[in-house]
Length: 199
Image 1 (cartoon, one colour):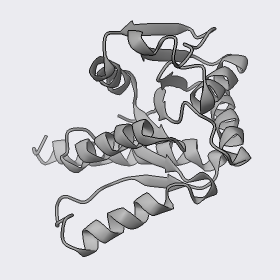
Image 2 (tube, rainbow, N blue to C red):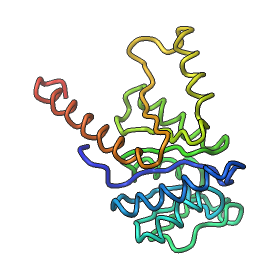
Image 3 (spheres, rainbow, N blue to C red):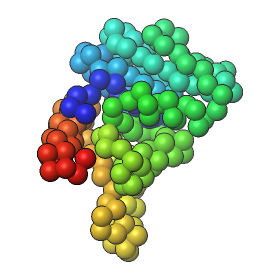
Image 4 (cartoon, rainbow, N blue to C red):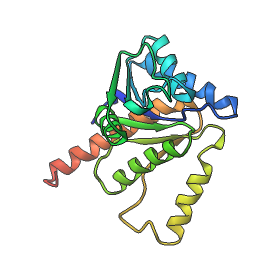
């Protein structure tokens, strides 16, 4: 994977109580559209989800929403997306979001956002994929999680060879450059392994 064509964004169906979160969602949606990078997201029109999607749509970006039937009303499915895919359950939603994305970004959010993020971190740890995973640490939102990961490492629960690999950006303008650089590194590493017959 040498390039990032579509990015999956995990984020809250609420906006939170810090205005920096909403500003970051707007900036990210606009940045994706401007860069020609497609947005894949949970399909809801509320909260940060809705903001990032509407900003991408407003910028002429490609937007794919994936939402389970039971959340169509609760999360007010986004309007104006290039594609809105309605699935039966959360498992199908997450599988499709994974398939459609070349990288993952976690903006601030609640338990659902955390669960989606941790699943991707686990899959990277187990080497099920090498797609970049980035935490947008807006207003130091993800610092407690980063401290917990360090705590797990210090107490021997993240043993050698099973490190958790992720990127952290504190500013939205750093997100896409970091993802593109990570994709180039992953591609180069894959080529090197192929050259010596390990892939």
